[in-house]
Length: 184
Image 1: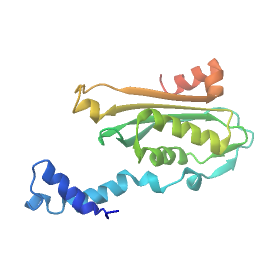
Image 2: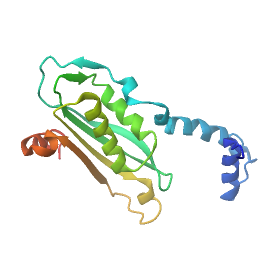
Image 3: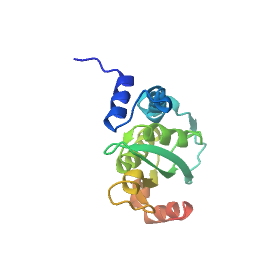
Image 4: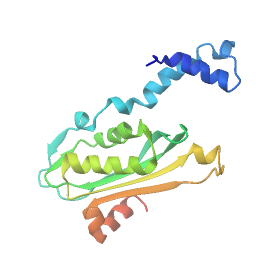
């Protein structure tokens, strides 16, 4: 198998689009793109199990909600960004996690090639698996560059996905409380 050199791939891409990779403004672009990709796709090198700090819930049995968590991801179909906000809620059974871990979990999954539906599901399933709570709710609201700057070119389109597990799916009161708390 032929060894792939990332810098050469970026140079080839510049040539493909009709640019001169030796032009002053582009000479260091391959290195900058590689550093950018290392951050944009850093989720592949992380496992949510390694970041979660789990605590005794001390019999807390009410909903815990984090909303308006910004995220940035990359569409796996067009390699263009999509971005938005995540809203996460869960009802603990015995364990809770550190509040800062919810945004970090979003980042782990968002910093991979994704589609919005899978991203939503991965966050919910991961929380369910790691905490075994009474229920989990995840709602993502996002804008997609693949919709905004190519194809149908609709600038204000926003897409909403949800994944509801346990009591968030089976109990209409729980579902309603969650949606009310996140403003939906």
